[in-house]
Image (tube, rainbow, N blue to C red):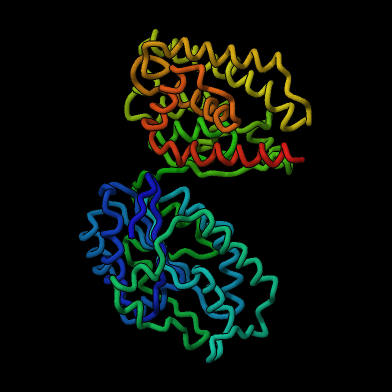
Length: 438
């Protein structure tokens, strides 16, 4: 089973105490085919110190994995754990504060070789299971701690694409036979851990040490950009389309405007205008969807095809972007939003203005495959987010043959269109239907 996620690919499996790490990793690495040797790879082990006993993990083992994977930058990170309350406390502390940094900000390929954070299995070190498989809570494990850990677990798996242990059983037979239970409460410290050039012990007090270790390896670390958005929002969808077209991965952070999450002190420090979409790229904050789109192409685009540097071509693209902002999307908002969010009635005069705007777009598209010339640009990605919104709101596009032709062309051409816009515009439709029923 393989799922390619662009710049961030995550694999999750269980690491059993009796498993051979080298066999496990050598079986996992082929699943990452398609990545280059320069991709930054992190193999995470929670509870991995069990495997360190008896030299099951050693420097040669890691080097063999690196050779078979052909990865230049491969790091093993081990979170030491032990049974009972300490592991729960440590997991809550480590994982909630730091685990996201590791998987979301530091890796191209993230391999979570893990016997703790598995669905419905996190209780294994916090609970003793009886013979019949029923849960028996240890007297020293509080319900609050377990609840917090479960909430973390659900949040992690909601956001994390993963390949789990069950998919690896047929690849690594030892995984299927090992019961994975620890027999005592002893925490084994491996003195040889720090001797491994590609292995870092990751615990409460050494997150900074891990970052320093990366710097000492002269490793270029890719940071994922934070993207504050709402999936159904047309401007947000336009940015998602641009990111997919450029090939950059965003750390998606949903802001619920209805709950006022855009008005929190933390977000106001990022964007005092408290609007979405908002992008944060290594401390640089930018909002307004069309500005974000052109920024992504200018900084991360492999070429300038989405936003050509030719002055006249770029000027026309800018004109189309401003037309979308001030005219097409502006009139869409003016017609629909007072009805959806304010309980007003539809205004026929506003509908006429909206129809005029769509007619303008139809004229722009005469004789062209795309909004500007005959290749996809950011103008198309911005405009299609607006037009797809009109489409799901049952605006009649049939009088505008050029728009209909262009709409189908962009849907077939824009990279990952359905993922970035198609499924999300349906979310807008669901919200609109819900609001209109009130």
